[in-house]
Amino acid sequence: MIVERQRKHVSVPSLRRNPVYLFACHLEWCNQGRLDAYQELVAALDDPDKEIRSVAENLLHRSSPRRQLKDAARCGERW
Image (cartoon, rainbow, N blue to C red; front, side, top):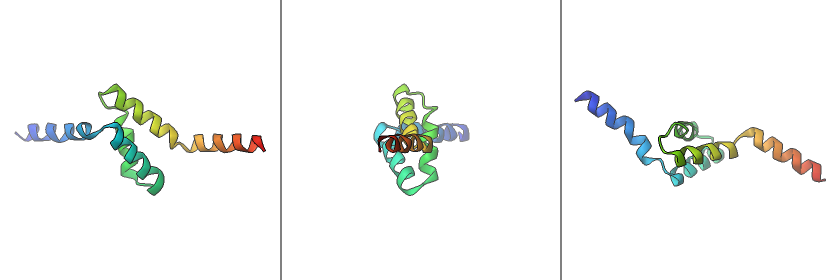
């Protein structure tokens, strides 16, 4: 019985993951620096759903400091 409860508890996070939820996590991570939101994005990389993994990967890439530095360098090249 305890094992069944633990299994249910483990499966709950993947049930609530959807693109809108992940986007909300992305916004909370980028705007408020919430580590738990970032951890949800990282955890979604292991989701059984291929679409969810792809969305998480893209959102993490968008919030990458490496990307921001690269974009800033491009802006400097134009001027």
